[in-house]
Image (tube, rainbow, N blue to C red):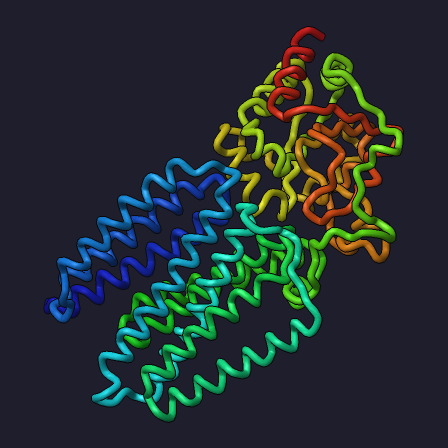
Length: 462
């Protein structure tokens, strides 16, 4: 068997690994194995780079790999769960930028000797999409990291300006195809970077999970385009897999929010409303029912069924192990305990699943929204830990609310509802939650981890 044939066989094996990895990632129970299979496939793919005789500058490749390992491993190991979305955005942006640079480099290298038209098209598309993914992901990172405001940044005529920028990019792309000019390609790349920034600025922090997923699909398409440019089948397959899975996930996330993708991207959702129905507010001027950890602990201990609803506040407090301890104590007393998982709880798809899996919460206790909603009427206590918008009845009942139409967890239909909150501040959508003022709702204020620890002690003492 020739070296070329061996490389292609290895690429086929790596592609199968990537497909199996995606299959594994569809369930928290098999996600760890899926990650391992995908990583092994990538190791095989990278190893084949050194077998390919047409590859030069091996020393530079080794230096780049070493630099990536030195940066990537500590970042991945030390990142907090609350910062995982930012890391995904940053890594995704780097991938898009790398794909664009590869296309620019290869085009510049061969422009003088003539480049096939289909390769030119792949270069133009790869550079445009990769640059948009890079700069857009950086803005998403800055919003999630709260370096810049998470609310939409808008101005009059913004969409018209974005449209003109888009037309300019297309015009420059056509010029590149007709002239094979490297300087024009560089100008097009710069304007595409600007468009990526303009594209994400008007999108609010509440929509960042959808944006990250969409930009991830962009990066996949840019990588696939690079595969055409480099005549590398594996890059085409891997990029297409990422692009397709990112697109499907984006659609699923939009559906989970009850809105179209166009509304997510152009509706400036997430902006704090200053007046009107469902406007943001502290809620301090309205009476709420607060309780002590001892009273709530007794309520939980004598319940037959408790559903725990985790949200971003649980991740911020790093309270996943404490909530697992509370669930164990309740189960030891004969209480049935489940976890209600909303598709967009947290700041990225699967955020709560990963967080609870870290605490070894049994997979069978993690119930998705469609499965758990029918159980709330027979639930004695719904314990909401750090969630807000995903349980806000305004999404179901208040026409005109920014979250109206978003499917929610029906915690308001439980017999009793307990919220663990730091304050009465609204969630990402910037609107008040009328459920806080329902007579059957009790609020326990404080850090989620401390409050859960107090509930553990109270349940044990009951």
